[in-house]
Image (tube, rainbow, N blue to C red; front, side):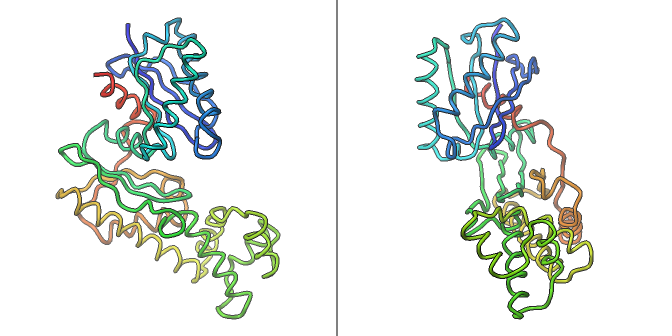
Length: 306
C-alpha cells in the first residue's frame, strides 16, 4: 500500500496528515514550527523528518511507501527559498537513511486554497497578522491579490489595525486628535501610558504591533468612534481585495473561504466585515472550508506523485 503526506507549517507548530492514495485520512500528528525563514532550514528539516518518522512508525510502514510529501509554509511560495529547504531535507534524509520519493515546499496560502475547495475553483481571503487573497480559476490558474507585506500592504490585517490603533493613541497623547479608548486599553494591557513609553516599546523593545488589534476591537465595541472608523476603513480594504479577485477569476458568483483569526473568530471586526460584504455584494458566497490546509497539502502531494 502506498501513502501521501500533507503538512501545514506555521510559526509555532506543523500539522501533518497521512492519507492513502485516495486521500482517505489514516493518521494525524503535530510537530514543531516550520517557518524556515525564521528558524532556518536545518531545524525545520529535523521537524519534517521527525513527522515522517512519526507517521511511518505509527502505521508500521516504510518511508519508501510514501509516494509524495507536500509542506505548505510561510515563504514557500518563493521558489528560490523553497528549493533551499527541499535540498536541505533531501540531504538530511539521506544522512539518516530515510527514503523520500517526492517532496515539495509550497506556500501556506496555496495549500489552504486547495483544502478549502478540495482542489476546485474558488478563493480564500486570509487576515491574520498579515493579509492576502488567493484564487483558483476554472482552468486551474492561481491568482493573487494583496500580500505586499507590512510596509506597503497587509490591509485589513492585525498588523495594519494595530499600527493604526497605536497611531491614534500617539495623536491623542500629543493633542493632535481626540481621546480614544484604545489608550486606556493599551495602559491596562501593556502598561503603556505615555508617549515616551510608547516610543520605547515600539522602537526599542520590538513591541508586537499586531497584538493591539484586539484592543481596537474592544474600543470599537464600546462605542469609540476612532476605533470604529479604523475598522470600517480596513474592512473596506478587504472588500477591495474581493472585488479585484472577482475580476481576475471572471466568475458570476465568487466563492470565498475566510481564513485567519481576524475573520473567523467572533469579534467586532469579523461581524462588521460580514455585514459590509452583504451590503455591498449580491454575487459573493462566503463558504466554510471543505478541508484543512494539511489536507490540501496531501491533495497537492497526490498530484505531485503522478
